[in-house]
Amino acid sequence: MESELRIDPRVLAEFLQLNRNILDAPKLAMAPDEINMGMTPHDVVYSEGKMRLLHFNSTWKKQVKTPLLITYALINRYHILDIHPRKSWIRNMLEQGLDVYLIDWGTPTAMDRYLGFDDYVNDYMNNCVDYVLNESGVDKVSMQGYCTGGTLATVYASLHSEKIKNLVLTAPVIDGSRDDTVVANLAKHMDVDKVADIVGNVPPEFMYYVFSILKPFEQGIEKYVQFFKNIHNKEYVENFIRVEKWLSDTPPIPGELFREWVKNIYQDNLLIINQMRVAGRRVDLKTISMPVFTQVAVGDHLVSPECSMPIHYAVSSGDKTLRIYATGHVGMIASSFSQKKVLPELGQWIKERSEK
Amino acid sequence: MYVCYLIHLASYTEEYEKSLGYYKHASLFWIDLISLMSSRSQSLMSTGPFRKLGVNAKQVGAEMIEINQELTEFNTRLGEYYKQLADTWNEAQKQFSKKVPEIPTDVENLDAIKRIWIDIFENYFTRLFDSQEFAENFGNLVSSELELAKHWNNVTSLMLETVNMPTKKEIDELYKELHLLRKRVAKLEKIANHGGNGNGK
Image (cartoon, rainbow over all chains, first blue to last red; front, side, top):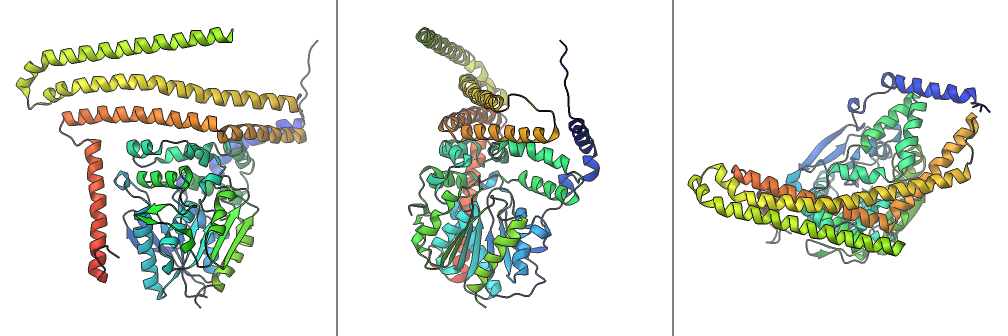
């Protein structure tokens, strides 16, 4: 008996359309290399080693004297905070009348393999804070840290609390024992001494591997199918290419910093129990007594909310706020949702607690 | 049956270890002996690269033996890694087939099926990547890869020594020295500019 395969003609039409879209893609989308990242004009006002301090130019009226210093993460680059004018975290903060500075960690080379927490926190960050204080004529800054930058900001606020007016932590990595993400699982079982001693800096490719197993089917297949399906949607395509470029551009992590990071946060979990030491000084989270605003996302698959939230309870601040948003790690900082919900709330919070 | 298989596997592994051990011993024996036999004539060219190559040849040989041994460990880990992926794929596929016994042919249902496929596979693989077994094997896989890199670095260093070039170890020492020097200069600058104390505070 002969079997008959019946296919809905619409399926065939959709398949053919997808093929046409794939062929048309180069005509409709820019190559990632042709795109310049970072939209808001800025000046590099201070640099040290590979690190640069950026000061964003604002055309909006400054509403408060206390400047905002953003400590970006160690993974990928700061461009995600300024990915598109309509989704830019930085532009939104400027529009709200804040004076915005940002620390860009740059691209560490083999020469930087011995940089550790002490160098990042007590030298780079502290020198940037001193520069900003000197320029602004105030004695304290508002500091915001995103992701691993949130951890650095936490350590800084503990060791140099006298220089911090307000602390904003966006998806910070704090309590490794509660982090149930794939990243934490791999970090807990890694011979980190061997990594740091043999290869020095952690190569970007290693990060890419970890990212690739976070949501392999959604991110590895479906995302690209949707891209080709939407190839005629100019805004969608532009945003897609920008985010893709951002995702595939991560600098190496200095070996020593990686070693300290994985041991202190994921393996021995010393930060949350106030036993982490940086250059011999104990990082006591109770010394953080300034206003603290913690932002976490329920759908965060890079830093689970359970890993970030303990900081809210560990600090001694009387004025502290915890917000849990129904979005993901990137959605919290670079989306229409963040523009409508996350940023207005944060801007208001900072302004109410800043020097006028 | 299973016990018999395990006994067979254990004796096979023992045999393998024994022959690997003999191979290592024989290689080192000949490398040593050749090195001893040829050292006198080599010393005539004590300043040229071949003399150094001759001296280092034994170490290069030893490193290559270590690399061979590490490769076995690496392959075991890599095999386990792919086995974990393949097993998970099979389990997910089984679950998908159970849920969707027949693939529909109309647009609406195909889209729904695609969603189900992604969800099932995503769940199974996320569970795998979240598991201790995966993380342990992955950690060991990376670790044995690093051992290979270490031996490779050692071979490269020996070659660089032969042609009077700085080795990775020496360059790393230099980087460390530079790092400490940079910190010291920064501390001194702070003291000079702000009149701080000896601790740079």
